[in-house]
Length: 416
Image (cartoon, rainbow, N blue to C red; front, side, top):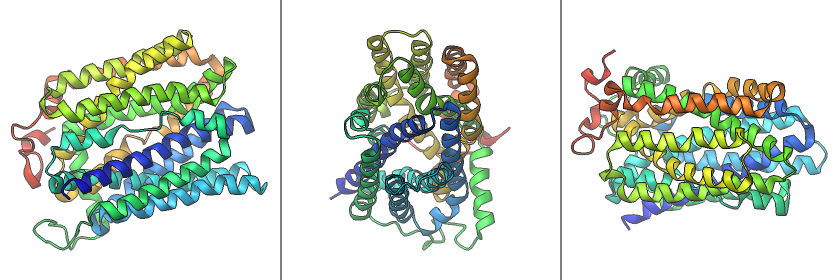
């Protein structure tokens, strides 16, 4: 029974992540087929990520008030309905591009709180399951569908949307029946802001993240990486594949190889993560998972070589999210976990609505290779940030797992 909440969270995360991965292949390919424009693909990405970030930014206080599981269940169900609207309206010949943007916005408004809610359940599930947080974040951090592209290629884009909606709804049901309900706001000692209003709670979440120097640096670094990664996965990779005469199955094959090796990396991180030195592991994982993937596309390597490079990069990326998630969770006060995780998720995606259309437009102007090479250089520079002495001290593991306790990091750590 102690393993039941962990199993529920892992399965719910896997189903929801599989759904979003499938949508990330189906939606850009649908836009490319119907408009033929990389700029339109960037606009769709901007709308989705803009609404995603807004929902995460503003939804944290509500999440901490009514409960993470409750938000996760309802948000996953709402995302399923929005995704289902794409094939239904398309089949009825009612899906204009502006209406597609509305549905994409609803998907972003739903998946933002849904993802934040499930990540925020990590300390609670680790506590009731008796598992180290590194193990929980490793098991839940990187799981996706290896055959997503094959589904789009074999069944078509519209059936892929049906499957995505089914996956999101299944995630909501698993979360509802397997993960116990927390009791937020009932213990004044557990939540010193039990009587505070929405603006004050929102400000507390912002302060908990932005006044902490290591968290602030992590947020800025991940912000830049997200701009690059989202643009590559939703704009550049489909354009690169299409230019070489391949279909969505190849997009799925590349992403699937990376996803499969990322699962292997995340599994190893779940097993050994709490024993590994965080800073060297994080730097190595970032160096392996970022710049080489982009360089392989920029150099127009053969498909087999791209698959090898992306596979190695995927294995490295399997270590990144578990480490960063534990660092964030350790440095946030317990009663601000929901707001803090929602805030970090929103801030790290803040630049995507602007960056994705800009990079998408640059691809149309100068081509994919210059954009990819420039992005690879930026990615490599970011990978060295955790090695900075001041930042590495904030990322390194607490001697007993979480020395800050419910009150979060010391004032010395927050200085500056």
